[in-house]
Length: 328
Image 1: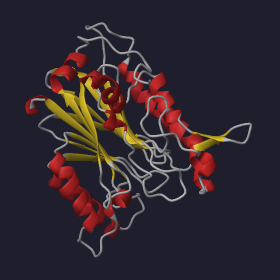
Image 2 (image 1 turned 30 degrees about the vertical axis):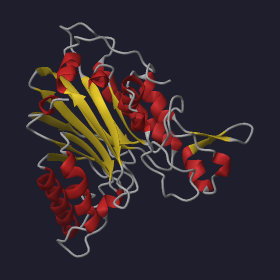
Image 3 (image 1 turned 180 degrees about the vertical axis):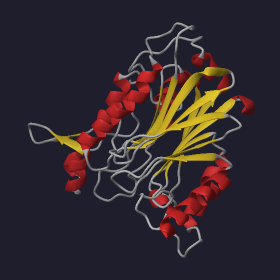
């Protein structure tokens, strides 16, 4: 792909935000490795970051904590050469953020969500100069790690953003939008067509983790929760990794992103995923899972879009693909 045609989207859950400062004003080694050695060389244009534990604070944080969080967040913006947006801290210490390359997306607007989520999504609306009337509704999200019912509820809340696409509306003169959602779902996807084998919950020794991630059946067996994926698919959203694997032959796009080193929890799984609307997904040119072993317990996901094809979709010059059409 021509470099000028490429728009790069990226998702990463940097474990515990790289850790606390070893002393005030000194960034931890894993943070520096993450931003300087993993993220910066990839030159993302849109980046979803998760688990920003030390880069965002609650309203009652001390002034020292607030200064440290702002210092770290500013360092991230400066290292990446991108503009950052943060959501509020939710019920747990895993806040989310989005970073934007303003040379690609000169028009941005953040919208804030209630803090009832485990981690409120960072919701940023973008526009491209070639389609200035079409909002691109984007969000990074991190669903609850321990509560299947809450994950389902949070996914349904995200469908408020999906609803703005109005996928049934193909009239070029009518209102339309795009939607990109990337995050740590804390659940595997629907297993059909996947490269990572489903978890055999009968062999899982961490029984609390099993309660967090699986559903007990009437016969006493357990099956993985896949509600987040199902909800997104039902609403006409599509996983770019599936497009890359099933339409472009890039089966490595379906590689596991987490669970490689978690003892007794069932092994590797593909829980870090993106979802694109039925037009934007057709602009996907490649998807890679970037191994970040030693820096984080999650690998990064890199999605390259063709700008030309994306603009065709924003203007509805192509037809939408059907819901669930990439599962298989």
